[in-house]
Length: 181
Image (cartoon, rainbow, N blue to C red; front, side, top):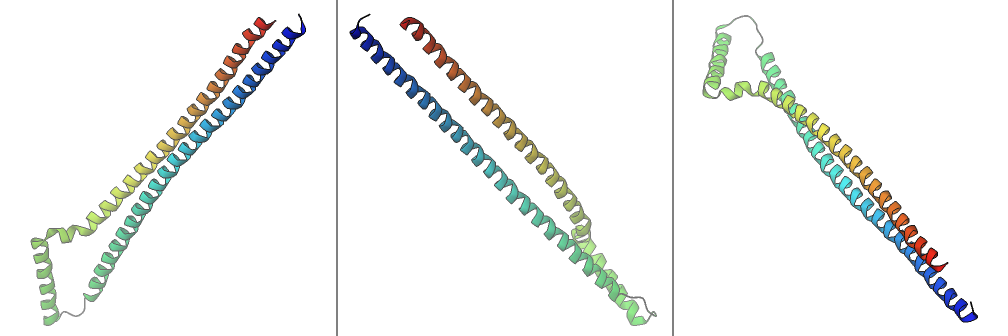
């Protein structure tokens, strides 16, 4: 081997070393960018998921509070009306007043039976909303578990791709080294 061949081999070796270094840096940055992209997408997805669910949860809680306040208000009205109808010595006027009130109540029930059923219906509505809230919380937990599992799969895929890239680079470099010798 003369000096010219040695210089040619040295140039080829230097060029291939530069190519390998460039390929390694390129692979590193492409992997880093893909991991960063997946992380940003996952963060955005989780952030929007939690924001929607938190706002929905707050709306439902506010509705529950409003319904409970309305029920307590109606109960207080009934109690105050009951306290005004205290039993005292029966007088003619008192009996007439009671008969008028009973007649008014009968008319209300006959004309609009919904008014007489509002409190039990409101209680039933509150129970239904509580059940719906519990179901929504369970659904949110399931979605979070799904996202966590999806992230595990994605990270596994990234690492398997990294291993594949490294192995393919090693396999490419090995035959070239054997040809040079």
